[in-house]
Amino acid sequence: MNDDIRPSRRNIGEMRGAGKVLRLLGLALLLCAGFAGCSPNNAESTETTESRQNAISGDITYFYFGYSTGNMKNAYVRYELMLEDEVYTARVKPNGVPDEQAAVVKVEKSFAGELGALMERYGVDQWNGFDKNDTQVLDGNSFSLTVYRGEEKISARGYMKWPKNYGDFKAAVNKLFEEAVK
Image 1 (cartoon, rainbow, N blue to C red):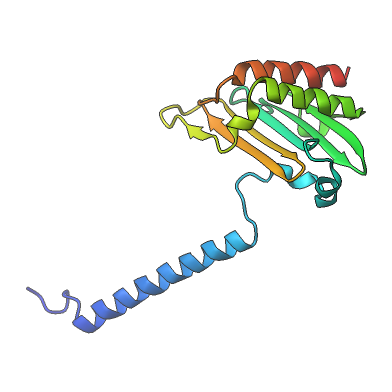
Image 2: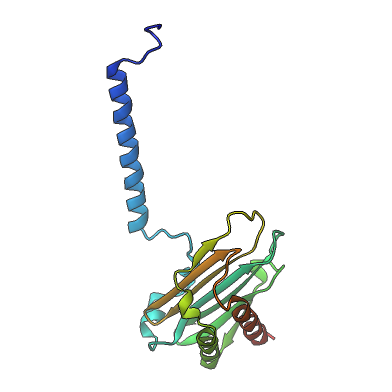
């Protein structure tokens, strides 16, 4: 065997040391991201901490529900309900419409009550932690849900996998929000 091709023991040790350094750097980056609050789903970023703290336990202080409808431009629907300074605002981004053209309207507290009743009716509290994907589908549909009620957070998402009662809840939320912006 040719000696100039074979690595020396010193070179092998240096390579192992470099691998350790890279692993430590990767671990440090992960820890920094965790402490900085990095999250793949930051849909709740528009609500305020003050709104959450001022809310009566059980009242919805922030609601986000979005789902894709295909793979074309703007092929997704988004519904948001935000509580700021004791005023509820609903945001509706219909399918095929750019985000900039989403409808934003003030709604009564009873709207949040109706939404809470829908969540109860369809068992949405049980969805918390749902995170399932069908990796065999390339161009499928997905959904994301984030809800704050007082200090409680419900978070769920899926890609070509849906929790129990998803279709009925989706239809009811569509109807409730679409009527709010008429």
